[in-house]
Image 1 (cartoon, helix red, strand yellow):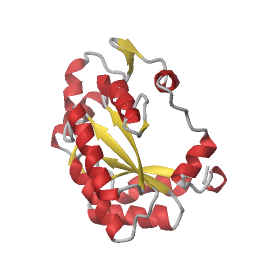
Image 2 (cartoon, one colour; image 1 turned 180 degrees about the horizontal axis):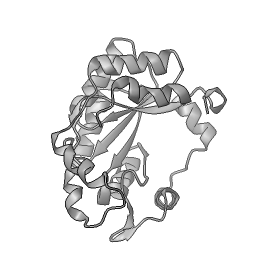
Image 3 (tube, rainbow, N blue to C red; image 1 turned 45 degrees about the vertical axis):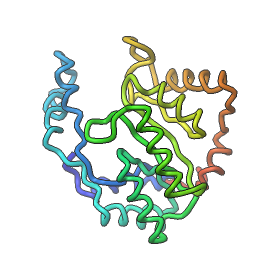
Image 4 (spheres, one colour; image 1 turned 120 degrees about the vertical axis):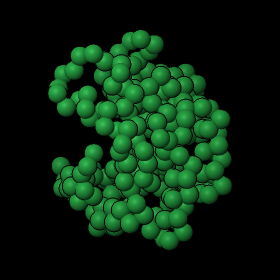
Length: 222
């Protein structure tokens, strides 16, 4: 919070990744309700950081987004995980497609359950998917993440709808009701078991790179 665009870009420009996140609009990103859940803190900055998000706008203007696309995309060959926290963000993606700055196959990450964005309701997942299909046809690939307890259910539903999935401790600290996850790996193994039981095949890293048209791990800066 509070970093300039140039400060936010510094790490990515140094790393020159194959893919990085790009939020597709400014939004209220409210994680302040979490502060009331805890009594003990590991670091002094944690509680005031959380509480301050009731007065913070996560800035991503059209100018900011274009600059990121040109610097990381055109100059360094990075592809983007276009993070869409609400249906309007899908239309922002379409805007850049119409301008020719975004070319298929582009990757849309639909995000549910963050205060300030679209709620974690299955009807909203269907609405976002229908809207993306209307705007992009077959020129995009998509995935879903959902915050907290909605993580596994939304990922499973997304797979049934033909999408991809994202799990990890950034999105949920839990592996099941009331049980903290030991690692990102534990969550990945769980969703993999679910998807394979449903008859889906997990892509290899090489297959994923081909699907997303990535530049390859030999062309990064780390």
